[in-house]
Length: 507
Image (tube, rainbow, N blue to C red):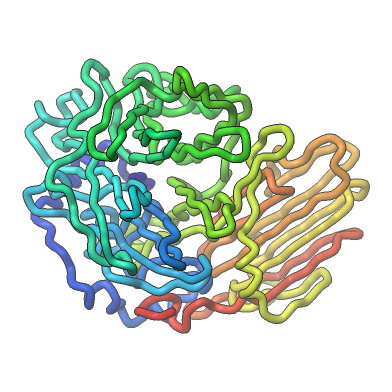
């Protein structure tokens, strides 16, 4: 479970949440799909990204392909556009593009181990049975709290739920946690976001954590039956003490708490993804199946912008597909007044290149939303709903820009400026150098997906950047797309996936 509300640290919010949401109750299905009247007309709400009908959302949880449908669950507050009272919302899709809302899948149980929140987790099929494993949070006396610093009164435990329905709408929880406490003797900084994976006859489980005074780490458990778990050791550990700035030399070591781990194979390598200090990091390398320890060889940042707490799944073709939470960057009072906060990223296909680097591209199924196509510099994307693709040789200088046009060209606001300087062999994004190109490459390829108030941009498969932008008024402005030199530029309007910006029960 991840949180990025700017006015609170994660620990402070958890402490407040445990004290304030204990009396929260379930909201009805009708409340979930009955939005405020203005949500369908809010131009800042996306038209082809997944988000709930209203209110707050954050981490993707347990995406799974089941009986011909893709199911997405995500952190959701049924009470308003603010973090708290965490439930698992539920949406279903035939293609990872067109979604419809279903009733909330998981809700806190009064008096249960999750009575203050059903935090993030995963979904698997265990002996043919769809199964959730997630972190339950409950307020307890401070001496029983997960963190032993005397300042917090919440306990994090790992819980499971199962379902026997084809549409995955009714889940039965085990009444007690399957992992009731973190390993003894460790002064940890958190204990949440379980991620299971299978190897041979064993289930293994990663849990996000960290050691106070040392840095983040991923705890490793194993089980034969998915209910009785044995702690082994850390899968991998970071080395950054808390309170310090991110490690510029090796940023993947940053943070004292590694949240939302995901661990999976790609061909003959393994990849670890985790979130900390408002960034998502990846490591690729090898898993020693005798010692069950992960050895990283390559590392990097998954997305350099407003993107957090991703989760992956396999699609029906066997591709590793990643989803992430795109949070708000406007002030909390603004998104609370708007009645919604956060969205899901577009699905991204992950792979490893020949150097072991993680590559990212938008799932090709999204291409089915393309409508009219245009080409050439100065083309306008109407209503902040489109896609731009650029291909340019590295032998020539290049500028590529997206400008927000609201009230005429004179009032244009530059959102993105990408500049290639061939003599210096430097690529600049909004004036800052980015590491997106390799020696020997002969072209630059850029994809930018614009939707309402978000841009997801990808450069040569190895650099991703998600940007939020905002504007006033009741109508979305246009986006002017420009490129210089010999660049080939293609632009599409994108068709919405819903007539009301997913603000009701629509497909």
